[in-house]
Image (cartoon, helix red, strand yellow):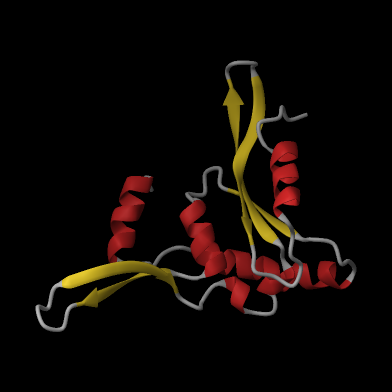
Length: 150
C-alpha cells in the first residue's frame, strides 16, 4: 500500500497494522532468553524493505498509539488547543518490551554515487530497563548506516 493511502486510512482508523503484534512475537519468543544471558543493550532490527513499515508504525508500537486531544472553550464551543498524546498501549509499558534498549528500523538502498548497496534507517530508543546513552546511539548509526555492505 502506498504511504499516501496508508495515512489517509490512518487518519480514520488505526486498524490494520501488524507491526506491534510482530514485534511482540519477537519479544515473547526470542528476547527473554537473550536477556537472561546478558546485561548488554538489546536492539530489535526491523527491515522496512517491502513491508510498508515506517517510523510512525515503530513509534506507535514502541511508545503507544498516537492520539490527538482537543481542548474546547466551554463558552464558545470552539477548539482552543489540539495536542498529540500517546496511549499507554506501547510495548515499552510491559515487562517483555522493557527488555529491549530500542528498535533499529532499516532498509537497503543502492548508492549510485559509488555503486554500493548500503543501509539507511533510524534508531528508536526505548524507555527500558537497559538504557543506552545518546553517544552509543550515534556510534550505532555511524557503524550501520550509509556504509557499503559486504
